[in-house]
Structure formats: C-alpha cells, structure tokens
Length: 132
Image (cartoon, rainbow, N blue to C red; front, top):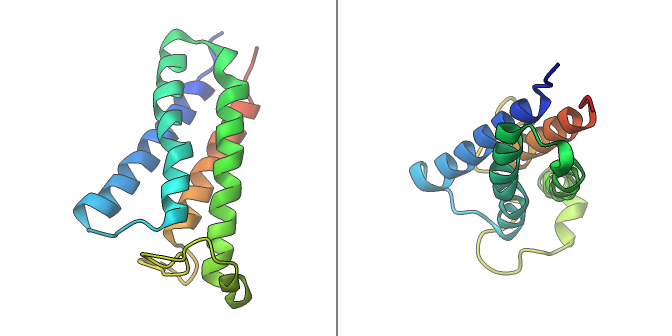
C-alpha cells in the first residue's frame, strides 16, 4: 500500500514556501539573515519532496530529514532570539533587519520563525513515520 507521508510532507513544504513568499512579496516583510537560512533549507524540500512523492521514491527521506532537522534548529534558535531577551546578545544579524524583530505576533507566541519551526517539525515527523 502506498504511503502518503511524502505527499503530505511536500504539501507542508508548499504551504511554508507560499507563506514565506506571501510575507515577503505581498506584505513586504523584509527577511532577516536567519529567515534567509530557513528559506535555504525549506525551498529545496519543496522540489525534492515533490519529485519524490510523484515517483513514490523513499530514497530521498534521509536527505530531506537532514535538511528539515537543520532548518528546525535554525527556526528554534531564531524563535528563542525573538522571545528571550538574553538571546538577543547572540548576534547573527549585525546588519539589515534585526533577527529579534517580530513582524507578526499572533496570540502572543506565533511568529514567523515559530511557523517555520512547525513546518520543519511536521515534515520531520511525516518523514519519520514512513512505511518502507
């Protein structure tokens, strides 16, 4: 029986890609340096998982999980920088948009890095639950 986890992981990456482009291109939110790193790890997942789900090729899973876990770590670090004042002393964003800035803050805790973390987490879980 065919597993739909690759397809669902691709769907999550599609939503994340669309959301990031919506925030930057439609709402004109300029991405900070950490946002760009998160994009570097999310955008290839859209392509890789799309091809893999079309071909039902589980060989991509270890590579996609690696990208997703690294992206999740960057998102978590970015989220902590936004929410914990002491973390703002760690300075990956020395020029341009500050990484501690929050364009959105829905319900007091949902920020763009939080949304990216959730997407990376869901992709990682979906890829871990695959049937071989």
